Length: 168
Image (cartoon, rainbow, N blue to C red; front, side, top):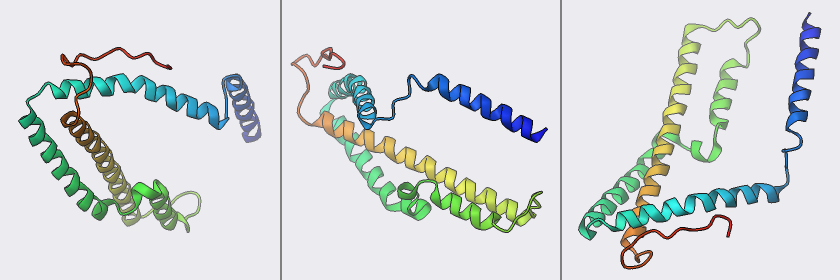
Protein backbone atom coordinates (compact mmCIF):
# COMPACT_ATOMS: atom_id res chain seq x y z
CA UNK A 1 0.00 0.00 0.00
CA UNK A 2 2.82 2.40 0.90
CA UNK A 3 4.67 1.61 -2.32
CA UNK A 4 1.54 2.18 -4.35
CA UNK A 5 0.85 5.53 -2.69
CA UNK A 6 4.48 6.55 -3.20
CA UNK A 7 4.23 5.64 -6.89
CA UNK A 8 1.01 7.67 -7.27
CA UNK A 9 2.68 10.61 -5.55
CA UNK A 10 5.73 10.41 -7.82
CA UNK A 11 3.54 10.20 -10.95
CA UNK A 12 1.50 13.21 -9.79
CA UNK A 13 4.73 15.13 -9.13
CA UNK A 14 6.06 14.26 -12.59
CA UNK A 15 2.81 15.39 -14.25
CA UNK A 16 2.78 18.65 -12.31
CA UNK A 17 6.45 19.29 -13.12
CA UNK A 18 5.94 18.58 -16.83
CA UNK A 19 2.99 20.99 -16.88
CA UNK A 20 5.30 23.74 -15.60
CA UNK A 21 8.14 22.82 -17.97
CA UNK A 22 7.18 25.13 -20.88
CA UNK A 23 7.14 28.19 -18.61
CA UNK A 24 10.14 27.10 -16.56
CA UNK A 25 13.19 29.10 -17.49
CA UNK A 26 16.19 28.64 -15.24
CA UNK A 27 18.56 30.98 -17.07
CA UNK A 28 19.97 33.81 -14.92
CA UNK A 29 19.20 36.31 -17.68
CA UNK A 30 15.48 35.53 -17.38
CA UNK A 31 15.59 36.13 -13.64
CA UNK A 32 17.36 39.47 -14.15
CA UNK A 33 14.80 40.43 -16.78
CA UNK A 34 11.92 39.66 -14.41
CA UNK A 35 13.60 41.66 -11.65
CA UNK A 36 14.09 44.60 -14.03
CA UNK A 37 10.41 44.41 -15.03
CA UNK A 38 9.42 44.49 -11.36
CA UNK A 39 11.62 47.55 -10.81
CA UNK A 40 10.11 49.24 -13.87
CA UNK A 41 6.65 48.55 -12.47
CA UNK A 42 7.53 49.94 -9.01
CA UNK A 43 9.43 53.04 -10.16
CA UNK A 44 6.37 55.22 -11.03
CA UNK A 45 4.85 54.55 -7.60
CA UNK A 46 8.17 55.42 -5.95
CA UNK A 47 8.31 58.73 -7.83
CA UNK A 48 4.66 59.49 -7.04
CA UNK A 49 5.34 58.94 -3.34
CA UNK A 50 8.28 61.33 -3.42
CA UNK A 51 6.24 63.96 -5.27
CA UNK A 52 3.37 63.53 -2.82
CA UNK A 53 5.75 63.97 0.12
CA UNK A 54 7.23 67.09 -1.47
CA UNK A 55 3.81 68.75 -1.26
CA UNK A 56 4.09 68.84 2.54
CA UNK A 57 5.75 71.80 4.26
CA UNK A 58 9.52 71.48 4.38
CA UNK A 59 9.63 71.87 8.18
CA UNK A 60 7.26 68.94 8.59
CA UNK A 61 9.36 66.79 6.24
CA UNK A 62 12.54 67.69 8.15
CA UNK A 63 10.86 66.76 11.43
CA UNK A 64 9.64 63.43 10.03
CA UNK A 65 13.03 62.73 8.45
CA UNK A 66 14.88 63.42 11.71
CA UNK A 67 12.45 61.20 13.60
CA UNK A 68 12.72 58.31 11.13
CA UNK A 69 16.53 58.60 11.05
CA UNK A 70 16.62 58.50 14.86
CA UNK A 71 14.30 55.47 14.99
CA UNK A 72 16.33 53.71 12.32
CA UNK A 73 19.57 54.37 14.20
CA UNK A 74 18.05 53.05 17.46
CA UNK A 75 16.68 49.98 15.69
CA UNK A 76 20.04 49.23 14.08
CA UNK A 77 21.75 49.45 17.47
CA UNK A 78 19.20 47.35 19.38
CA UNK A 79 18.09 44.78 16.80
CA UNK A 80 21.31 42.70 16.89
CA UNK A 81 20.64 42.04 20.59
CA UNK A 82 17.50 40.13 19.58
CA UNK A 83 18.39 38.69 16.20
CA UNK A 84 22.16 38.35 16.21
CA UNK A 85 23.13 37.24 12.72
CA UNK A 86 19.70 35.97 11.67
CA UNK A 87 19.45 38.63 8.98
CA UNK A 88 22.67 37.35 7.42
CA UNK A 89 22.21 33.63 8.04
CA UNK A 90 18.49 33.38 7.38
CA UNK A 91 16.82 30.23 8.66
CA UNK A 92 20.10 28.43 9.49
CA UNK A 93 20.14 29.33 13.23
CA UNK A 94 16.61 28.01 13.64
CA UNK A 95 17.41 24.79 11.78
CA UNK A 96 20.60 24.29 13.79
CA UNK A 97 18.72 24.78 17.05
CA UNK A 98 15.97 22.38 16.01
CA UNK A 99 18.55 19.84 14.87
CA UNK A 100 20.31 19.97 18.24
CA UNK A 101 16.99 19.52 20.01
CA UNK A 102 15.71 16.70 17.84
CA UNK A 103 18.87 14.80 16.86
CA UNK A 104 18.46 11.99 19.41
CA UNK A 105 14.76 11.43 18.87
CA UNK A 106 13.34 8.28 17.35
CA UNK A 107 10.04 7.61 15.69
CA UNK A 108 7.41 7.87 17.11
CA UNK A 109 8.35 11.19 18.62
CA UNK A 110 8.35 11.28 22.39
CA UNK A 111 8.99 14.90 23.21
CA UNK A 112 9.02 15.99 26.81
CA UNK A 113 7.37 19.21 27.93
CA UNK A 114 10.65 21.08 28.44
CA UNK A 115 11.68 20.22 24.86
CA UNK A 116 8.31 21.31 23.49
CA UNK A 117 8.49 24.61 25.37
CA UNK A 118 12.09 25.21 24.29
CA UNK A 119 11.26 24.53 20.63
CA UNK A 120 8.20 26.81 20.84
CA UNK A 121 10.32 29.55 22.46
CA UNK A 122 12.99 29.18 19.78
CA UNK A 123 10.41 29.51 17.00
CA UNK A 124 8.76 32.49 18.74
CA UNK A 125 12.11 34.27 19.03
CA UNK A 126 12.87 33.61 15.37
CA UNK A 127 9.42 34.85 14.33
CA UNK A 128 9.70 38.07 16.37
CA UNK A 129 13.18 38.61 14.94
CA UNK A 130 11.84 38.31 11.41
CA UNK A 131 9.02 40.74 12.25
CA UNK A 132 11.59 43.22 13.56
CA UNK A 133 13.68 42.85 10.41
CA UNK A 134 10.60 43.52 8.28
CA UNK A 135 9.87 46.61 10.35
CA UNK A 136 13.45 47.81 9.88
CA UNK A 137 13.23 47.35 6.10
CA UNK A 138 10.03 49.44 5.99
CA UNK A 139 11.62 52.08 8.21
CA UNK A 140 14.63 52.23 5.87
CA UNK A 141 12.24 52.81 2.95
CA UNK A 142 10.42 55.60 4.79
CA UNK A 143 13.72 57.22 5.71
CA UNK A 144 14.98 57.03 2.12
CA UNK A 145 11.71 58.46 0.75
CA UNK A 146 11.74 61.34 3.21
CA UNK A 147 15.38 62.15 2.49
CA UNK A 148 14.70 62.06 -1.24
CA UNK A 149 11.65 64.29 -0.79
CA UNK A 150 13.84 66.81 1.04
CA UNK A 151 16.36 66.71 -1.80
CA UNK A 152 15.97 68.08 -5.30
CA UNK A 153 12.41 68.39 -6.56
CA UNK A 154 11.23 65.84 -9.08
CA UNK A 155 9.18 66.88 -12.08
CA UNK A 156 8.12 70.38 -13.07
CA UNK A 157 6.96 73.29 -10.88
CA UNK A 158 3.50 71.87 -10.28
CA UNK A 159 5.10 68.58 -9.22
CA UNK A 160 2.64 66.39 -11.05
CA UNK A 161 3.82 62.85 -11.75
CA UNK A 162 4.74 62.18 -15.32
CA UNK A 163 3.63 58.88 -16.80
CA UNK A 164 6.49 56.48 -17.45
CA UNK A 165 6.44 53.72 -19.97
CA UNK A 166 7.24 50.31 -18.54
CA UNK A 167 10.05 48.55 -20.31
CA UNK A 168 11.50 51.57 -22.10
